[in-house]
Amino acid sequence: MTMTASISHCWKSARLEFVAWLACACLFGLLPQIVRAAGPESGPAEISQLQVERNADGVFVSASVRFELPAQVEDALLKGVAMFFVVEADVYRDRWYWYDKKLLSAERHMRLAYQPLTRRWRLNIASGAITNSSLGLSLNQSFDSLADALAALRRVSRWKIAEAAELEADPKNSIDLRFKLDISQLPRPFQIGALGQADWNISATASQRLSPEAAK
Image: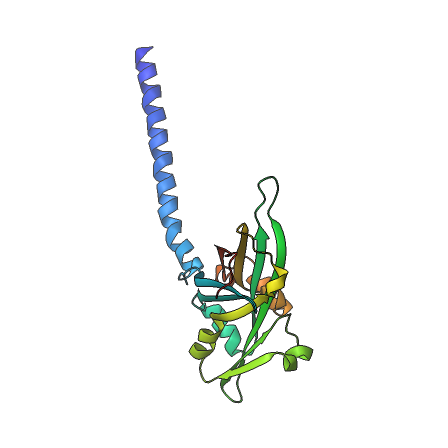
């Protein structure tokens, strides 16, 4: 009985060691494939230098967005596919007994496109969704390089999100700022191909308390 128990114990230990070895082999064997499939990291987007100014003329937001354009997105741009970016600002009032109350919302839409004939980049900016019929109503800027166009796209300078009278002077008010690549405005094949792809996920958020005092 003692010999049988000893053999059984050794057999169980050997099986556990084999299972552990097999798991490690699978993990390290598959890891290079997973890394290759994922591709190089482009790094997360980030909103920095968020400033909210409130004066007699209204409420203004300034910010910088840090992100690198993934290779897949740049390749699509060079092939003539326009990219749409959206900046959203929501002002909330804190409520301890329920969800925070949304007081107002504002949006800024940006369309970035490459023009092969002129080899220039065009950035359109509007307060609503930019379509082919509304391109003429948007602010239009042209750039010689993609770097210059991205520098303008990454910068939010004194964007007016509300009139002064729209918000009461309340220390409980705060602002949420969001920036994203809006894949819902891409052509249908690109929307399907972008689903679940990390390279197409460019988004960042930031929050700040809104000062109740207007700047002098």
